[in-house]
Length: 414
Ligand SMILES: Nc1ncnc2c1ncn2[C@@H]1O[C@H](COP(=O)(O)OP(=O)(O)OP(=O)(O)O)[C@@H](O)[C@H]1O
Image (cartoon, rainbow, N blue to C red; front, side, top):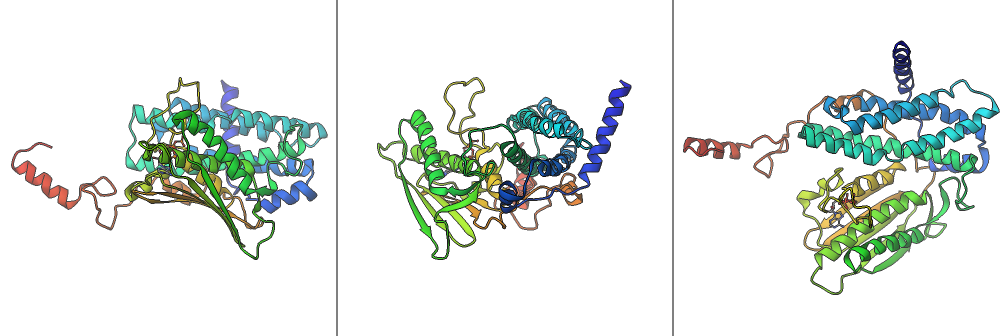
């Protein structure tokens, strides 16, 4: 009992210590240069044994700012326990300097990565538990969205660092000889588009028995080199495109459900000097403008929720994590993902990636007073009138107030 209290105290002190440091963002060029030329296992170890606890401590401090009810949900407690254990294991390497420590460190990173495999689903489950037991008001919803963006971004970055180390210096095999860890210095965007399309098509045909075809156009600015390739992490790009294809296919097939042939999807890849842009256009009926803000909210989905016991075929949609997570992958190296919809016709989803590897810097959440204020402040009262009878804060607008007052005066209960 006494020992565990001492352990907790030490852990609290170490968290305070490491969270004082800001995470250090690396660029795609840093990763490539390190993997190709300057880096050795020892240098990577020296860097990661500090940087990983810093990134973990920064986000663990934020977890503690979440609403109390959420922190008591079993799934959130489970996620927290994984982070605490991994943090504890990492800081044990603080003072180790012998050669054996290097192998132990690589093995430990693999264990940590495996432990955190189901973080996204488990955290999502924690939010559902809160919804079911306490409900979620607008302020809590806002804070949770803010937190999840930062939490999942932190996770993407921690996995990136771990993967680079284990792929470069561990015994893991199977990646392409051209790759530097998980990065392809010559990532052929058209190949990834085609690959993501084929795999989404497989799911779509399995589910709906038909699927739109694909047309691809590629445009290169005269000044660019290396054709349609870019320095990028192919698995990240694949993740985004696969999610976008699934959404587009579902929209097209459902919007044209009475037709035997459905309109094609169109992808345009454009490489400029700064941006590589990928536009996926569908004729799936689009989304009304009033809904577009919701699309990037975690758990917003118009698909039926897949049942947990469905162990058969993978569902085409349903968790509502596709778009927000894909946008994080795009933003991780300072790209972006946006959706422009034309209700009644279709949707353009656009992914922007940085062409220049020295501009593709990691975008990381920093724990500081600005961040902590978000968890204690409410959504400000809007200083514009709202188009709906309830304004953005759920307060009644004047018009609704008068209707309510009128109804009350004539005895209609609301
Ligand atoms: N191209 C599109 N056309 C029409 N609606 C779309 C399109 N893309 C997304 N949406 C809408 O946005 C919602 C959220 O999409 P998102 O990808 O985040 O989740 P999902 O596809 O429902 O589930 P999953 O987590 O399995 O991806 C979808 O349910 C759908 O209503």
